[in-house]
Length: 156
Image (cartoon, rainbow, N blue to C red):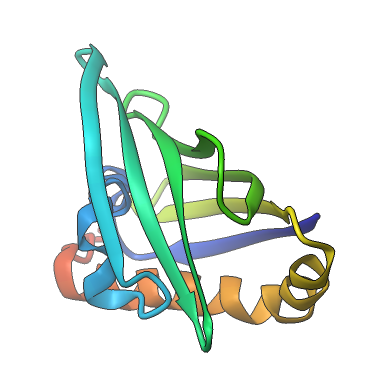
């Protein structure tokens, strides 16, 4: 299984960053590895939590894959969790967790973990070779997107 843990300090509020990351339908606009996202269902769990199911397309060179994921957004805890849902496809296991930790100066520390396991061993070997690069590419894409859509906090 390919695993990565990243932390990034960003000059935006935790709420704004969580809202941006939870807007998965916009991913194809700024993450070229994700050409398509389709929300299948959405439900409010409580006033500050929601769960939705999405089909996500992934494309890297000649490899193209689609998988279903379940997303849980908890605005009170300032977390977002993504897990693989359903059967079929090349993805055997997917766990992606985001924590948005407010700092004393109103900025945010993002704690990001991603675990992916593919069903076919040749693809599993290939993903392990490129995984760090791809995860950092995705995190950089989110950082750049935040600069476009999230206000920079006033650090006082």
